Amino acid sequence: MMYAKEVKAVSQYTTGELAKLCGVSIRTVQYYDNRGILIPNELSSGGRRLYSEEDVKRLKIICFLRELNIPLGTIAELMKTDNSAEVISMILREQERLIKAELDEKQKKLQNLESVNRIIEKQPLFSVESIGDVANIMENKKKLRKIHITLLLMGLPFTLMEWISIILWIVSGIWWPFVAYTVLAIPFAIWISSYYFKRVSYICPNCHEVFRPDIKEAFFAAHTPTTRKLTCKHCGYHGYCVETYSKEDA
Image 1 (spheres, helix red, strand yellow):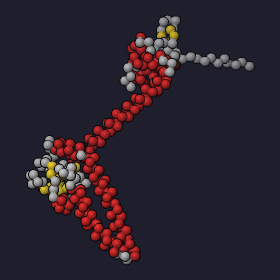
Image 2 (spheres, rainbow, N blue to C red; image 1 turned 90 degrees about the vertical axis):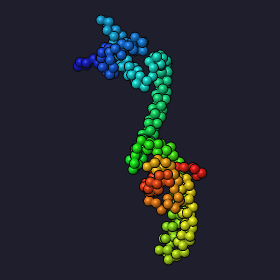
Image 3 (cartoon, rainbow, N blue to C red; image 1 turned 135 degrees about the vertical axis):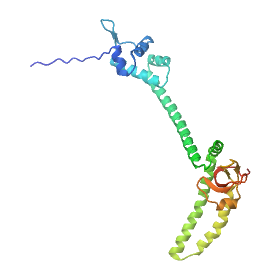
Image 4 (cartoon, rainbow, N blue to C red; image 1 turned 120 degrees about the vertical axis):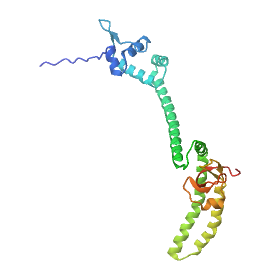
């Protein structure tokens, strides 16, 4: 019985084959060869450069590092060190951190652009001057959101009291907790309205001036989450004005 002798073939690639495998030009492979960071494994009898599987892996690493904008000189030094794998791993982690930070920054810019577009779409009389209004709104957006959260937290206990008193009245016929709630709710509503309207102002879409309305007018005015139908104190325009943050003593 005859057995075939197994022969382990060793893959070898010419410059052109290596370039094709790694998606680069032949000149790039030759350049890396001249720089001494991708020396061929051996030469053929005809003097042609031959590269091994390890050279393929090495070139792929070089190409990847170049895509991360790491200088070729730095790559050459890395390839010569004994702990090149560890150093490259550290570089990749740092590049990952930088890219994530860049993505976060771009995401914030995108969110700002989306917010600006939403504000512009809601402007009834948008013009070049409205850009200043948008800048004002964006600058004070976080402060205004903080006020809204504060109002929500302060109002939650009263909302809870209201529902408890109503349910108690319906279920057991005990009505006096609802009356007590109403007595407390009226001065609270007056106080919280005063607190709120002392900390917000409105931008007139007609003259683009910032003004603070009378509390009574603002309290009863029709409104949306970001606008309120008011009369401008500067030009007399009556319509929806955009809400923005202002200091209490403004």
